[in-house]
Amino acid sequence: MNKTYRLEVAGVTRDLPIIPISDTLSIASFVVLGDTELICAAAPLLKEKLPDVDVLVTAEAKGIPLVFEVSRLMGMKQFFVARKSVKAYMDNPVIDEVQSITTTNKQLLCLDALDAAAIKGKRVAIIDDVISTGESIEAIERLVKAVGGIVTVKAAILAEGDAASRKDILFLEELPLFPAE
Ligand SMILES: Nc1ncnc2[nH]cnc12
Image (cartoon, rainbow, N blue to C red; front, side, top):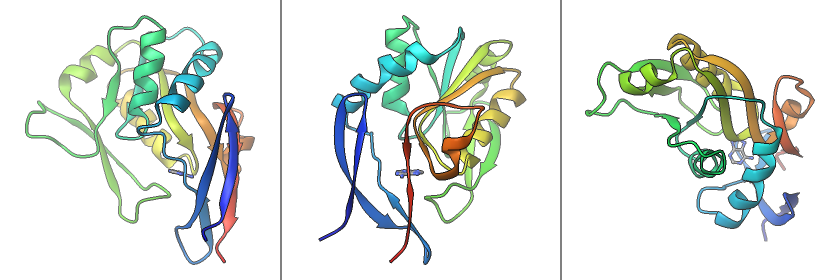
């Protein structure tokens, strides 16, 4: 039987499986993609914590349903997703590179020119499901700045490991890291 970690967030309880991701480290796997109940419980709480912003930006893929719901609650007509690969339908994509805790290789993050133009000069909330090493959120931040956005706040449902002591992010709950057994 796999070990689990009981997470309570936004009035919802989840028993997260603890999964080794290296010889020394395990994580409690937090997958909100498809978790309608958790997203709809967490989104209003995150929305309440946000300062005034004009646009919301996330990265593919796990942040997408969360940012959809926050944008809907804020009455916004759209939100922006930094993609992890350049698509054939992208015009003049703006690209950054990222190394995340859950991926072995470096990943791309990119915005197409239309999204880049819409973000330019706007106050931006960068929102993700979980902030861990901070590499992913910082890559989104570089990308947003590269296209002229004003990064106003960085927010997530969970702050994992050392991220929980960061003062420059908003989050609802902490998530511990675990030594691999
Ligand atoms: N605990 C976690 N679960 C799922 N994705 C993650 N990305 C970073 N930390 C994670």
